[in-house]
Amino acid sequence: MALDEIRNIKIEKVKELRKAGTDPYPAVSGRTHTVSEALNKFDELSDSGKEIVLAGRVMAKREMGGAVFFDIYDGSGKIQGLLKEDVAGEKEFGKFKEFVDIGDFIEIKGTLFLTKAGERTLSAISYRLLAKALLPLPEKWHGLEDAEERLRKRYLDLIMNPEEKELFVKKSRFWQATRRFLLKEGGLEVDTPILEQVPGGADAEPFKTHLNVLNIDLFLRISPELSLKRLITAGYEKIFEIGRIFRNEGIDREHLQDYAQMEMYWAYYDYEKLMELVERLFKHIVKETLGAFGHQYQNKTIDWNSSWQRYDYYKEFKKHTGLNLDEIGENDLINYAKDNGIDAGKHIGKGRLIDVIFKKKVRPHLIEPGFLVLPPIDIEPLAKRYPKDPNRVERFQVVAGGTELGKGFSELNDPIDQRERFEEQTKLGEAGDKEAQRMDESFVESLEYGMPPTAGFGMSERFFAFLVDRPVREVVFFPLMKPKIK
Image (cartoon, rainbow, N blue to C red):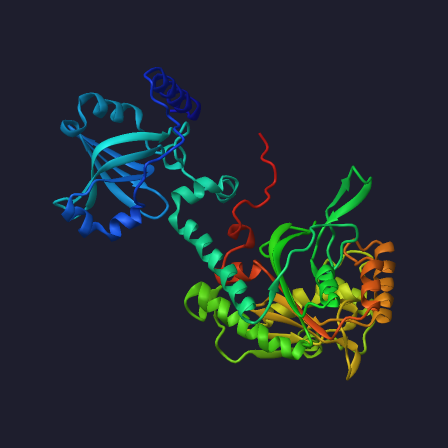
């Protein structure tokens, strides 16, 4: 039967119910227990014969003469229900058979008992329709096997696949573990603007909008970094934010345009001291999220409780490309990219060339959890220079399984140096680099009032996707999708 026909039949049922004086969408439920509560207290409730009220979605329905067995699911669990004609009465029993379908939400009043087959069951004394579904659940028409369709209609995916619901419970634990750890370490959770006049804090193309009342262009933030550093200048010493980030970039296994990210800034820390904290943070998150320190990622075994590696950016780059970053220039990088089939784009500058080549040729080899440290200054305009080599910066990235899972560094607090680096980024932007950072006069001015030595770190839900070995768009409820062509 076509979907439209099924929908029309259900709409007619709604009309008949209303004509008979039954509201198919009442506002209130008299539920006394969740399914899980009823199952946990089954012996007590069944022995006492106490009447309870359960509510949930009908997920299965089986008619057997003068009885109807059905399964209801309320989000906490599933239980079998039984409605008998000699208990409910001929009229109500007939209405249940005719008007209650799989997918509907109902309320059941009754007592618990154990069937001969050992099934814990609610014997219904009465029932009430709570919400009449007009469309059938996927398994009743064409299934929900197509991956794109599952993401477009994620609510159906969650109804039909309990393991997907559990995935997001696990994701909630991930962020709860992050927040608890940072609060325990003395962090203050803060909230900074999403709309900005100057987007900054990351190499990414922003989304642009317009504020009519002030007639100014605004951007959705690509990072909260510069706002958070202003708060360090203001006197807060340990701050963090978990919030939405928006970047107008491509879609792949690791990237989204709209996602959750945590950034933290600890005053009087440098990158070395922060690495110690971040390692403890990651181990805490992994254990709280997965219940263990080890897991599989792309057929690789990742053990977060092992001794973390220390990967030197220059050494790893030379090891896997043969190029010495102390000696080569931009043309050498352009030629290497061409020779190795790497699309580096135009007008992106030496820093971005290094970064693109690194991601393609070097990072896939960094399997064991560890810190990738001291990259060239060209790729990080907001980090402090490394005292032993001013061409490098005090930055680290958490890497594992051939990918990057977070980035931190000793924050640049020299306003003169910061202005010069912004000016270099501005030149790249004028040459056509859409991801170049922009001059932020307000931020530079805040540095001129003095910001203490500070280290910062950021990670996104990409880390959670890594832990469960899924593409990042599969671990958000409603990812942006290309419009479906009708």
